[in-house]
Image (tube, rainbow over all chains, first blue to last red; front, side, top):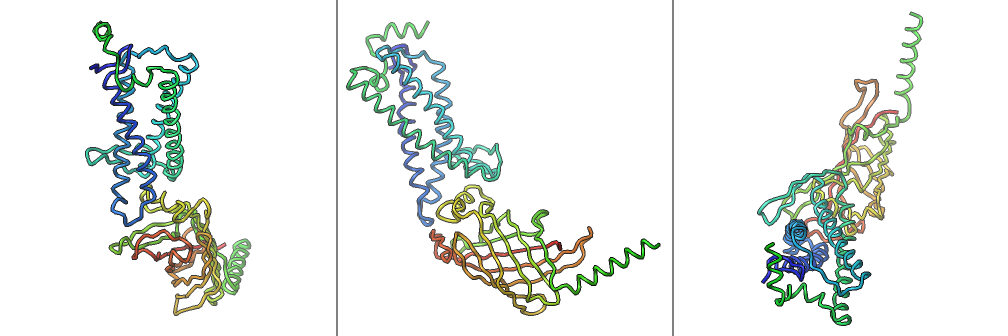
Length: 194
Length: 192
């Protein structure tokens, strides 16, 4: 099993980042929609937003580590997409990064504009850096729009992956699931150690 | 000397005029924040949650000789609700509570003032909040008034009232102990 990415495919770290963050982001979307509608006397009225805030900060950290990991790894090359498809997929991937970062920062700004820190599962807290009256309203508005945008983009991304898999018979979806093909283990490992 | 006499005469005249005038008009000193609109609501029936509206403006007229002729008018910027907790304030401004996008202002305008003892009065008027207008009764007290150290005249009051959120179409269920809100208004007016 590959820890790192190779030119042939994604290692286990990148694949875990992809799938765990995908699950967490969908979970957060549902949690966010659900928690703002809770009755005041619901037992989850405080617990649900606390989980949402904590997980949000964890996801922000995960996103930053993922970027570093991506930068420190070789980029898998897949040339079974048309140049246009390659451009489109690159645009989608970068949109994900930008939207997710903005989504998480906007969430942070809902909590902190009065100087309050964000507590993360009681483990640590992120201090407020920007104090501005009424910022929580604008941040909340942006946060909701970005959440919808991220989910819409995820749908586009999934449909594109399925299309490449079933209609184009491309291996592009398998690479995020199965990792680099084992027939190339030797050459890839050599590349890795060079 | 001549000039001094003239000034004295004018001062005497204005003093005379102001004491005999029916009522003097005052602008509530929100500029220097010698006024506040505070509210409190019970939390779970266990404690008082307090907050205030930071932005408002208003005027009143008052005649010491005839307090019942007094009038007061206040306009509140509901977006300025402040309970010292950004997330809660966001919720208060939201659609299921104050809905400030739809109803950015609340107003109070007195319809009658009835004296209720020395420096005390009951002010009845129309409170418009969340798009609904209802009659409310404010128990008011004059704290004091007179010359300020900077050449002006001031007069100050405090008043309290209680409203039921449901009367104003604010139907979000905050629990059985949190259906009413008490409002306290502290106003200091600068005579115009």
